[in-house]
Image 1 (cartoon, helix red, strand yellow):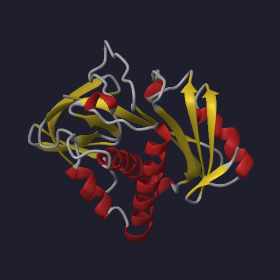
Image 2 (cartoon, rainbow, N blue to C red; image 1 turned 90 degrees about the horizontal axis):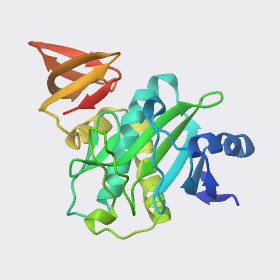
Image 3 (spheres, rainbow, N blue to C red; image 1 turned 180 degrees about the vertical axis):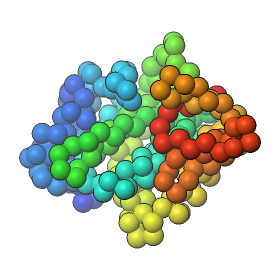
Image 4 (cartoon, helix red, strand yellow; image 1 turned 120 degrees about the vertical axis):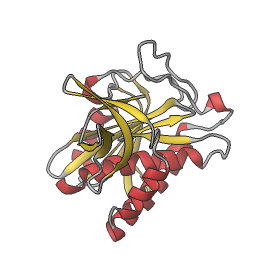
Length: 238
């Protein structure tokens, strides 16, 4: 059943392998910006093909919309900010921060992840997973996971989705009207480990330094050996 959330076509399914895969067919059907969520996701994935554990009651959703090539890195950061704002709207008692570029942490534990993938023409797919009722056990991960329920927050996945769409739409409109400056400021205000020592792993190389900021292209700026290194991609660790 096709519905509307704000200006987006929307459908909610019982089960999919991956919302990022399933939305491709939905986009071909509606031929317009759209959102697809699912109660159950059996083969979700994160960056670099890593598996994403899908537990009952959590939010699994993908957005498909056009993004200009020069705007991709900005939307990667904007998306994390939208998730952080959404989760903050449920409580004033938990600190939600964004680990570059767009993982969202709650009290040092991962509560949400985001994956961008190319679709047809100028469309991109933004897949988002948010732990609402359960958090997976991540034995070998750098960060443990948490859910909203762990912090005493009781809500439903579609309520989280509705608020997420509202926050994303507001930030998208701000970006389209005023550019990246305000988004960048808000992102830095919510950045995890800014000003602290971090490690970046990229192409089998490791770099240690102080996370200073992001630049106007959304790249991470790392101070190391009295110089600033610029990273467009990489895995960040404490």
